[in-house]
Length: 215
Image (cartoon, rainbow, N blue to C red):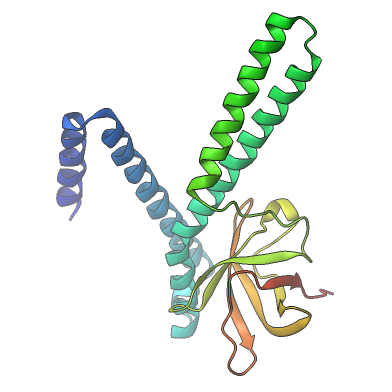
């Protein structure tokens, strides 16, 4: 199996040299994302072994398998959010420089840099809908749902104080429709599993999430 994996990696590298630059870049990005997914899965596996979770019930192991499957979505969500934040910062900085220039030539140059940064941001957000970040633990939202696995991705992470094992209520409008618990927390996004849902309720993107009071 190790020899086959090595052969596939070497073949992909050789193939990439024959591709046009744009396609080669896409291939390398796909390989990097796959590597990140594998590392996230292995990290979960190592943590489970250290905690002795491999000896627990099938339900517990299934819950952790669901989180592993969501690692790819978490990685993509976090990468995209970081890209948007960095580009918004670049646009803001360019606007400040443009506003502060008094010489016509420098002001024209600064305006061009601002417009270029704004076009980059527009192109980035046009490819995907930006996920608004939660400001705290009481105003998060569901940003992705895996109906088959009944697992969800939330727009909050360790930056907002989220921690693995933290319980949340799920709301639609002002009505509580269920609860979930976080099983994987990254800087800007988290994955959780529903624990209780009202009869006939399926979690939807846009449902609000608020932390349950903890003692």
